Image (cartoon, rainbow, N blue to C red):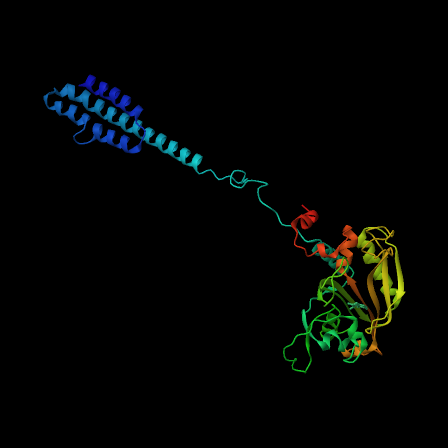
Length: 353
Ligand code: DAH
């Protein structure tokens, strides 16, 4: 019986070796250790054994049972580890995403050159203590004209061809329009804060004009206003020069001419040397070598009054930068119509990454 038990263990080991699943191992266990298993089968012969033989066979049988149990536990663990490793290999998470996303296959968007310049100018003015304001596109004539010292019969209304709305007037009986300039934000800005203050207001404006290389019906301006005590033309020139130098990353030649705008007195036209042709003459500068970039001046007392500010106590300056012109100068673009052509070949040249 001892020999039988030993050869039983050998055959168990051989069978165990080739098994691959936990279920098969458990089946093998019941084949050997179960009530009707092979070990019990052999032990049935105990009834014919002598007491001496029994003393020997009993411990041997227990030893074989323990060995079988031990081998099986090892095998079960081995199979479990193998299964875990296989699962891990299959469900590997690729934290580099190299295999899931084809790098380079995706098209990246980019900022429009107008946005790039607007953000840059906003940063420059923010660093000089200015706020950045926004204002509505649809206005009424109070904000676009009257508060800016352009009453109903004033010839200056004809300077800017306006898109008027046909609908009813505002509560105060004012006609609605699409703002022709960002100077409207001067009025909102003054009415909603107390001096001293300084702000810029970039945004879209609309004019019922014929388009050509340097004119569009929808374009961008950037308004600026500073109100406080004892502000001078010197302050105005200083801020303009610093801003232009920052924008162009070099000294830009400028010239100042007297200019008329009803909302400033005195008013100026600040021109810069054409950066597209370096002053030689091209379609952007209309062959003059200079580009009108920045009308500005000292805020008219009537405008301060309309904004609820006492002109005896406070004064200030204002300017209106042609953002599209600036984009054209900075990037050497010779036709304003490219800017909103929607042509991706144009837009993609300005990607910063
Ligand atoms: N709003 C004027 C325009 O669109 C530009 C302008 C001129 C703005 C003089 C100003 C200014 O603030 O002081 O033509």
